[in-house]
Each structure stands twice: as C-alpha cells, then as structure tokens.
Image 1 (cartoon, rainbow, N blue to C red):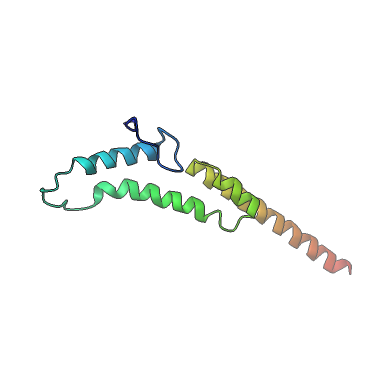
Image 2 (image 1 turned 90 degrees about the horizontal axis):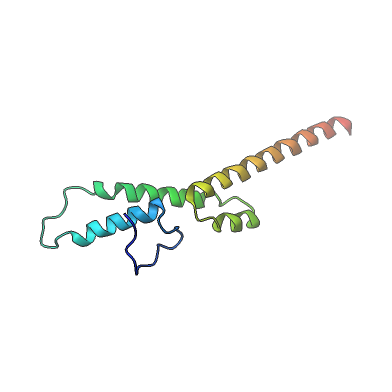
Length: 112
C-alpha cells in the first residue's frame, strides 16, 4: 500500500518505507472502523506497529552513549536498521579502543 497522495510522509521515515506503509495501512484500518461497532476483542492488529515503534526507540537509545558527533550522524540516518548498525559499529570501535588503552596501560605498569 502506498501512502495516499496529498498526505505528507511520517516524520523520520522515507516515503514508501516499510514503516510508512504499515502506518498507512493501520491508519486506513482505523479510519474504516465503524464507530458504532463493538470494540475489538484485542489490540493484536496494532502489534506490528508497536514492534516497529519499539525498534525505532531502541535504535535511538543505542546511540545514547555515543559521542556528540556520532549521535548527530546517527540522528541524520532515516533508516532504523542502518542507525542500529551504525550504533553497534561505533560501540564496538569504542570497546576495541578501550581494550587497546587498557593493554597499553598494563604494559606501561611493568615498565615503570
């Protein structure tokens, strides 16, 4: 399903992205729901949207411990999976740097 014309894409999503399409599908489903009908037995139809929203939140939370420059670059990334990969790469690089610094510090302790 494509977002109806005349409607702006969701903030932070690319037009036609999976999240945009899911939101459009669920919005359409909510709009065609008869207000006089009995309430739904469960919220299962919203689980897919909730899962994608949780993943989006996780991708920003993963960037919390990055440097200011890294966070700015991550926030400029519109793709959730790409933001998660970037955060993971930055965190792994930081971990490698700390391990190397610890090894140098341990080596210097033996010298002095």
